[in-house]
Image (tube, rainbow, N blue to C red; front, side):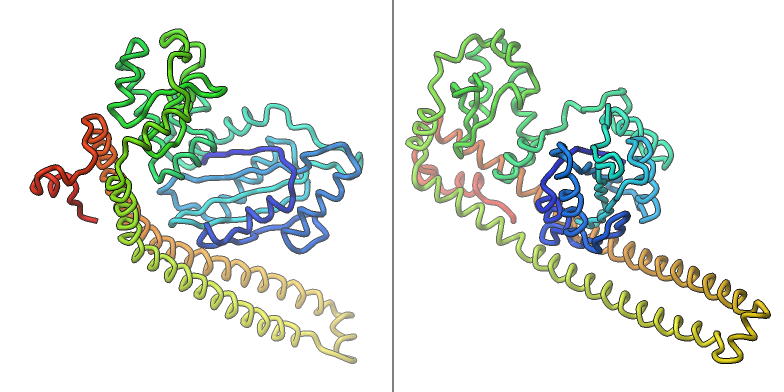
Length: 423
């Protein structure tokens, strides 16, 4: 599984992120170890408070464990991976919280350790933790028999198609897949050998080259979003400048945005807005179905938890009745019968705990199958919408390049062919 870890502070912000049930179908605080507090907010606040007695500004280590998309990974496997990570990081015995997120029919986990050694009142150093997590990640893939990602196959940690968080968030604001955006810049770079050819290649794909304030060469799309050329093409700044020269001859971002705004007609902007609204409307039934499914699944889990709690309470009462009172209790203590009864009760309690866990896991996998089927339908519709959106963007660029201000100048038959879509 993919392991991503970081040292950090901000206990309250981290707790808010881990307990966010708005973006996740289900959130479960699976384990709290070594804290006085009984909840995640209190546990992380406790770590932050202890860290004030030290110079450490990043008192916790946060690790995410992401199994492959199609893998069925139980709680035990996630716990085992967390234990192995704890050992290789050198955090054995430190206070720890494990939170499990379920989203889009998948399960992943977050583990947070306190880095503060309470006896020496200093933070535990974690040298080369990225390399250690990389090696452990590969071992976990091999141990579970999962197909190795390309990054592990080539002994490289970062795949060229991976993205930073900033790149991903920027692409999400446009509601486009960032892989599509990055491939635009890579293909434009590969098919050009100077400034003019690169500029033309980007314009064919809907991007206008401009001079950035601090990032040298940038590109502006038809919505005014700015993309750093070097970062999105996967290049070094000096390599870009070596081929393209200086960006002084290009207009700045403000001028490019103004020119794009002037060239886009009111009808085209209205059409783009309408298209987005129609796609959102088309997705709404699936979004509603997802909300109903999540509500139903949460209800099933709450009902199972309530029934298990009631059963456990009754079983505890029955086990307690096995201990006699008064003179009988004295006789049982002298004969050793009380110790035999206690061992039997402990064994039954452990079997009950294992039984309840198996029931919860069975319910999870059944719900995950339903959620996965729904997510497959959502992904299919979104992929089709992205394809249509890219086609619309190319058409708008064609309108701008040819100086047409409105699609209404075209014959109705062609307009129907270009703009007609099934959503």
